[in-house]
Image (tube, rainbow, N blue to C red; front, side):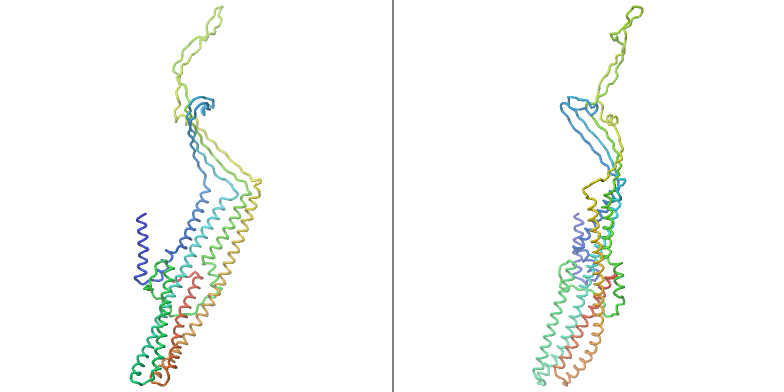
Length: 471
């Protein structure tokens, strides 16, 4: 146990150190989160619990076998178990038995219990898979949020760098008295705004890192680095909501679990109905006992002696002789009594339910109510799933259209800013016009980054519903 504990701690620390000191991949993030997540572990315990119930229901089909031993000491008047007669002495006794019984017919109860627990076990396995899938999706979304914020931070730094270059140029002109000081101060104010954007983007990045590490259940590390995932090339998502829904009902563990529980509830109804049927059982028994009072007589010798009777032969009395045997009494040993007292029996039992205070009837009623409830749960799951897919598909379409529009907007504002920058350097336009053009392109680029990852996130959600690998 000490070695196992040391190994587990070493692995955990290794994962933490790796997360802190090197670049973290998406696969490592998901695997660490699944390994450390307590809800996943609890769901796994529920699966183990369902497995035990399944094994027990299968074992119920096997015969029972019981052994019993009873050893005692009596003082005074008691019944000798060897002769069944009264004795008045100290008596040691022992009884040994071995019996077995098996249910031959119970209205299908035992077999339906096996089927019910098998379905419940499979449903628990689907619950575990669903827990892992949902956690995987959350980790991927948090991972993409880090990449999103990293790109926004890079963009904010680039914006500040452009402004800083212009500030340096105006400072030179201001020293030469070539411009009004207000122009320099306005641009410095813009630089301050750009620096605030850097601070805001850095804080958002640290928050995204915190969210990911909390999902992984490892200590926070602000120096965490993650591997890049390409999010530059996009094509329209081809699957329709109906196609995704049809795949989800076949692939998604959430739907499978609900359907398996409905099937398990059907078996519960059959189990409840079995109490209306008689039960037939077969039993067998083996018994022997021991008594310290048990004795046996051993013949020592035989002699002829007169019996006291006589017969007359020709007027003469002739005595009658009889055989006289001499015995020695000794105790019967333990194992000899086992063999002598050995007995077996076999029996068939029939238990017919005549009246049981309507318990069987009400159990069937409750089982049917539970079945109806699982049917409603399955229907609710399917409805919510369909609505979620429709909403997710709508959000994906909107994100894609917004992304395409922003791509064109960035191109236009970039061209406009280049022209404005050249004209500002030449002194043709004021700094107000320059700042307007700069803010337009900066805002468009930031929005494009957000739309970039927003669309990627929406597609990952739809891939999750389709049961498609998320990386």
